[in-house]
Image (cartoon, rainbow, N blue to C red):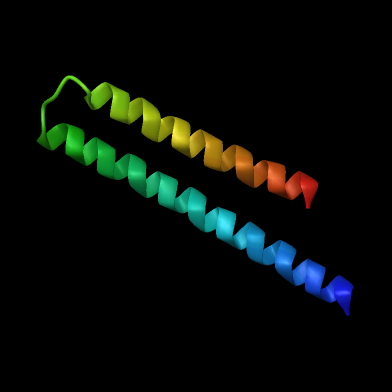
Length: 68
């Protein structure tokens, strides 16, 4: 019974991390739209941070797949 629960919890984590990565992609699209609408000096910083956020979410997903 505990093996079934472990597998269930593992796949719920994996599904949650896929959803989190999808959220990171949405953040990138929003930052790009904001950068086109508002001209500012810090736009490049927001773009870089959004791409780092996506990279970290993908790395977290890969780490979870290898650990779990």
